[in-house]
Image (cartoon, rainbow, N blue to C red; front, side, top):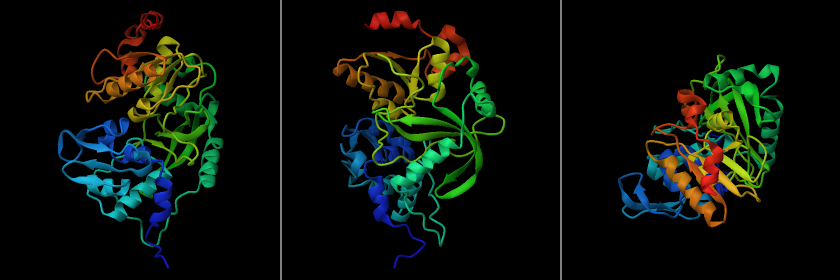
Length: 355
């Protein structure tokens, strides 16, 4: 008989299969460039170098990788134990937590606490995940409803003018959601919800931005988190579709960045939510032109992801334009706040040059 203070690894392993890119992207930001290009050699996240490490091509299924010096890690649990210095129960607990609510900016550089004695938290089934997502979305109000004024205050605090946005947006306001880290509730906060669709356009999961009562990001370790997704609704290739589809699709990393471009140029831009998802974005069938509004990170990760996406889409016959902010360490929301619409390129001219 299984002890109640231990997690059962079998359902966790099953649930993680096919979701390791999301899990490792949340727990290990140092793997971001590797996750963007599985199978490609690069610097080892443990001891550095230039090309001694790679993730397996099937990393989304296995979670594994190999270092030429340290050896192979056959699955995601072994990889986490090696990379983070965790024992197996700690890695198992971290994966279980992320399956229940994946953090977009996880901060697990220190050892997470093991599950509390006497508590067993089973992995959610697909049916329970669907119900959780449906109930959470239905309990929230449309972004432009009177009761969603706190969400609009948050957007204004980021430098946006929500009153200028017309038409439906897949954003809602939830007055009170629990915030959890490694199974422990750290409090309850209001939140902005965003509906993330898969590459096929079907709703896949919800992204949460936890807020304070004065419209700022909540003071929690990871104010932006994804909720779990059912096994038949993969996230890779998807985006938050902040507007309808047409032959020319805009894509950026963050929700606020995408809305900043929309405010400045009038173009509908979707949000990939992370550098890793941006690199693996798949536009809808019939797309003729993609405009990538790339971040210009000092690390270069955003630009590399944009160029990788550009190369892949162009190989399939889609015309691609990559637009970069004028200064390193900025995104297009920063441009809006610093220079206003004058800091944005004239989109019609840029598209003509790229044609």
